[in-house]
Image (cartoon, rainbow, N blue to C red; front, side, top):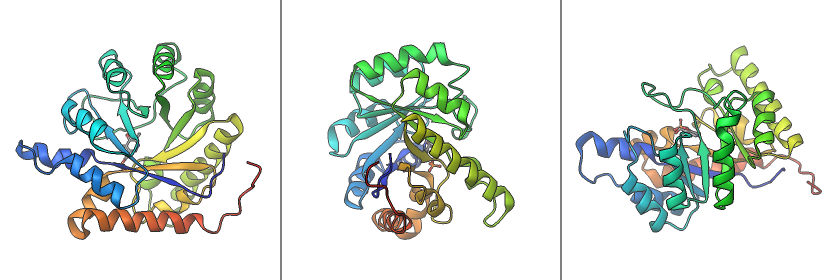
Length: 254
Ligand code: PXP
């Protein structure tokens, strides 16, 4: 699937991180979600972690009812989270691995190794009409396992690529892996998303990959908003993403 238009999902977790640093209600993730909508986002993403370190159950409730944009709920594959997803019925669920001590999601889900355990999640989320995405490393084995599981979407982990230096051979190598994985996802008939660690300096080569149809970006946007204002920073990302896409020639039969 190729698309001239690249969807931008804004992850608002770290608005909640700042709120939780003091307790209380400020700053409000729902308000951030509404600003994201105004600034040209196509979706809002929130990760409800087991330890509730940022987004809370109440936030999910408020987001589900308070915005018009589709909500993408990131969560670990646990019974507790499955129950919450089935109760709130977000437009999409992105399953991520979750280690208790990690600062952020550290790698992709090992779909191949956890195949049997994930089957039930794929079936129940699919039956509830929730679009399932699996957050995976740009790796053929994982993509093939995602396809076999019946997930319609994969989100490629861009964290390793973003951690490399601009112009370094490591960056070229990790970008190449993402390009190849996105092409393989297309061959398998999987809708391909990408995210983690993206910012102004790293987004353009990823946005230029024609078979990627959605990016999910959070930490950079919220952090940069301190200096430039949330609406302005999301609008700048929107413009950058659109211009990275402008030179691609699309196969209209795709
Ligand atoms: N996609 C997934 C699956 C994630 O877990 C995260 C982080 O919550 C993101 C995208 C966004 O990453 P970042 O906050 O680094 O932009």
